[in-house]
Amino acid sequence: MRVNVTVNGVERQADDVWPGESLLYVLRERLGLPGAKNACEQGECGSCTVYLDDVPVCSCLVAAGQAEGREVRTVEGLADGEQLHPVQQAFVDRGAVQCGFCTPGLIVAAHDLIERTAEPTDAEIREALAGNLCRCTGYEKILDAVRQAAAKKAGVA
Amino acid sequence: MDFLNPGSVTEALELKASVPDAVPIAGGTDVMVELNFDHRRPPALLNLNRIAELHTYSTVDGRVRIGACVPYSRIVTELGSVLPGLAMASRTVGSPQIRNRGSVGGNLGAASPAGDSHPALLATDAVVEIASTRGVRMVPAKDFYVGVKRNVLEPDELITAVHVPPATGPQQFSKVGTRNAMVIAVCAFAIALHPEQQRVGTGIGSAAPTPLRAHEAEEFLAAELPWGSPDGLLDSLNRRFGELVAKAASPIDDVRGTASYRRHALAVMARRTLSWTWSEYRRTAQCA
Ligand SMILES: Cc1cc2nc3c(=O)[nH]c(=O)nc-3n(C[C@H](O)[C@H](O)[C@H](O)COP(=O)(O)OP(=O)(O)OC[C@H]3O[C@@H](n4cnc5c(N)ncnc54)[C@H](O)[C@@H]3O)c2cc1C
Ligand code: FES
Ligand code: FES
Image (cartoon, rainbow over all chains, first blue to last red):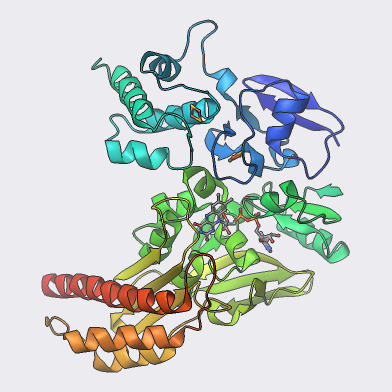
């Protein structure tokens, strides 16, 4: 089947989509957007997190056909040209990236948090990132990065 | 495999009647795992996401009618003060991403004994609205679960909503697991005080083939609680309640825990949630 979906502001079309296929598969394998990662395919790791109509979801658990006519925003859609989004920059600055596999999902989850919550507490940060697993960093640097991005957004850094 | 994409409840029911093997997909947080791992190859998926009516809630006959596909995250943020028990249970489901998609309708469709909404629905006398081209029927949550991952749905039926009475007293939900996020309950317990009827509702999760109520424990509390008085609860009453809740369960040993641990944990959760709800009840009774 054919799926029409707006991805990062651009109307896209995927053909020959198998009806049981995930949105994640369509993004990566049919639309050439490998940002969202495939690690578990069961909603446990969050590495596939994207916005679906402005709501962060695990794209491995959305059937491609459910995205028909809707808006998807992936990690590829956050930077402004060559200019990294402050959340992305904070991950670089704070050394929050090691192998990088978890990073795209964490960036989207952290982006959503600081869009919704002006000055998140540590508890709020942990809660917002509870659906994203990282096997490398031990999370401390990731928390640092989110604090930095939130402070920047609040204009206090 | 076909992808059926109805735009209305009527259309969805017609499709379900003509393709009874079609698997409804709401948030997909159960269905997609099964598809991704090849555990299921249905002839068709029936997408419920385009049906606006299933994604809204309203008040009908004094109860909150929650459309089957309303995600947990909205129940938490929008219905927390009216339906505190269900909101607390929703709050413990998976992770933010899972709560943004997963729904009570999907929890009921899957009917897992570990589903977190079930104890809260049981304790609050929720009623499931089930529809087909043959008509609509209302099934109380206590009659909805019929076996391990089995419910009363006929092949041509869909869950269209769940009707939950607004809280008239304190409610609590408690769940035991290895982490704060992303855990299937080892066991879970919900309690709702209904002071105007001097009655208590309970719900037990993950400790029997189906979610269930602890009837004897409910009757014991209805009779023994010092309704209307500002008194605290005797230890003996708390303990007896815990014992009766544990007795109502028929847990098994599995990878998440042993039967005896589950019984023990249920008694602890029952005592704690009772003392929390009772202190809240006393506080509000004193202010009133
Ligand atoms: C990582 C992860 C963590 C999880 N954590 C928890 C947890 O902590 N607690 C918990 O309870 N669950 C948990 N779950 C399971 C799942 O999220 C819940 O059961 C959720 O409520 C399912 O809702 P859904 O809308 O995604 O259902 P779907 O996956 O779309 O559907 C679930 C089942 O219900 C059927 N169905 C859906 N809607 C209807 C309808 N309207 N009428 C008839 N049948 C219908 C489907 O055909 C399917 O059989 C978790 C899942 C994942 C992947
Ligand atoms: S790949 Fe989707 S949550 Fe892990
Ligand atoms: S950096 Fe390797 S998994 Fe997070």
